[in-house]
Image (cartoon, rainbow, N blue to C red; front, side, top):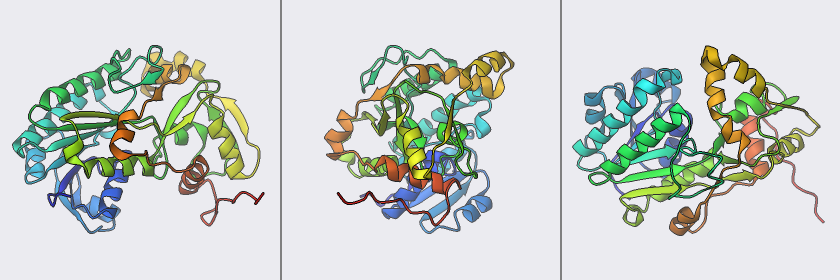
Length: 330
């Protein structure tokens, strides 16, 4: 494995932090570009193996300086608070591309989403599925990946695509913002997709997949797109059922108020953002992980019961000392 440090953009975000921890666990040296170096170091408890660089991902010179001497750039950064998405996302990826070129052809690694695709036409999402996004954010994602593909002639690119996140630190996820209420015992569920298949990615498994892929650079294509299958809930009942079993009692389940989001979406904000992703809860999108399995042999997989238990415990929905009950012997 290379001795070069790996630059992380977005180390305090959901996926950036999870992948960074897994990289550290495997002995990788990291460099992180952050707006406030002191605050970031304190948040990470001065973790060994991270070099903190103060700067902004919107500043091209700062990204180029941070990438100097690195061989890989993990682009897991998003606009602060997801504001000004339309204006900031593409300049951010352009800065990472410029930095990768200046570093002599560093690999750019992107956590991919399913929002590049039309869910009504893509029930099985493969690496060659046409990207025909129907929303503004989806079209920006399509353009972002088009720019990465063009840049891959100079800098190799790895995109690992996954569904919605569950797991420790997944507090900006649908799991935390709809299904359960962080910090409270599980007493109710708002199910956004009952009756429809949905893909979930357990963050520790996804992070392990990133690290294992980065450990085999010679096997990766110049422009590599890999899908992470994760946990497939075939009809929207698997996760609610497991949540009830882990909580140890029945839980009131209600449908997510999509009608209210449609009513309020003209005013912008959260309802409009939620309205944009409603189709991905109306149509099933399953990820084909054939290429991932070809590379790794098997996809990292934690049982759904363990994944849900650890997620709920991390979110303060279970007693911190809670242990997953083992099935009785036959």
